[in-house]
Length: 141
Image 1 (cartoon, one colour):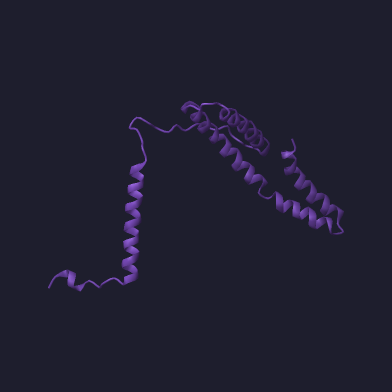
Image 2 (spheres, rainbow, N blue to C red):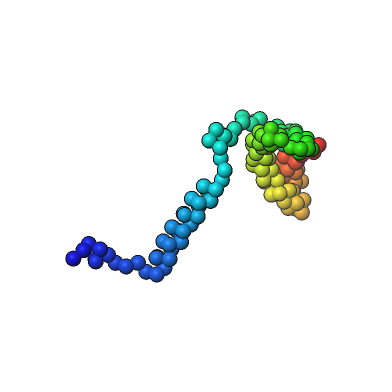
C-alpha cells in the first residue's frame, strides 16, 4: 500500500482556496516579469530636507511644491526633469508626514474650542483656544 493512500482528501473549499493562491502567485510572477528594467538602470534615492518642526515642514512643503510646479511647466519634459521631480518627492513626503502628524489633531482641538465656548469656564476656553491656535497659526501665511 502506498503512502499516498492514507492521505485525507482536501475539501472542495480548501482545494479551491489552494488553486486560487497558486493562480494569484503565478499572475504576480507574470506581471512582475512584464515590467521593463534595464540591467544598468537603478532608481536613485535622495536625502530629503528634514522637517523637524511643523513650521519647517510647512516651509518645505510650500517650497518644494513650487519647485515641482516649475518643473511641470517645462515642455517637453525630459527624463532629467522626471528625476528632479523624483528627488523632490522625498522632501515632500517627509514634510507631509510631519504636517499630518502635527495637524491630524487640529479638528479635535477646534472641537474642544467649540465645546468650551458653549460652557461657562473662560479659563478652559482660553486654554483650548491657545492650544488650537498654536498649531493653526503655522498655516497662517
